[in-house]
Length: 226
Ligand SMILES: O=C(O)COP(=O)(O)O
Image 1 (cartoon, protein in one colour):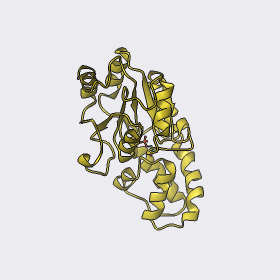
Image 2: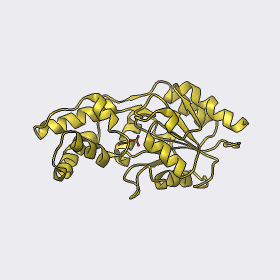
Image 3: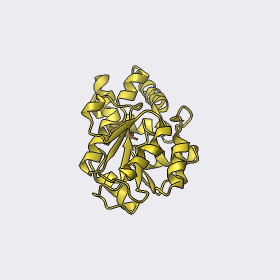
């Protein structure tokens, strides 16, 4: 099927897709746990908890450390004080900047649909000097719903001028939340294999998968030719 006739909108997930933010999230989590005199978590544990947004992250931490669920609000408030501008340990995945500029030069409208809070997202995109590439940023607190609900991605597509349920757009992400969201919209999903996914690739609905961002512009171009 011809997914992408004219340069179609391409919407990206953020954490585990464009950026490796797990080290900063891990540092902010452990500083928060230390403040409450609680045991630290490993980087692998925290990485496996990312993708559902801040509340899901802390629900998973509370379950892992067998804490009182009533602590959640205080833990999140303390965490946000650190997390809101945590960029020092965060990196763009190799080739991201180049791939985004190729797609922008080809005329693809670009957007972000992440479960990360919108203000934190804007801070990180500014930090890397790539915020202006994106015509829309939908964060985890932009709507009442978060991924895997389709509403945030539908909003991103609509704001980029695409029909919110048309297949003439692409969502690029790394996780179970992203695959389920794209399927629910529905929109074709491209899976970045090297992010924070916990589920085998074959169990996630996706149109194609890739390891290197240098592959992405041509992958998207093949949809236009198919
Ligand atoms: O869990 C988060 O905070 C954000 O994750 P996402 O960018 O992969 O949606």
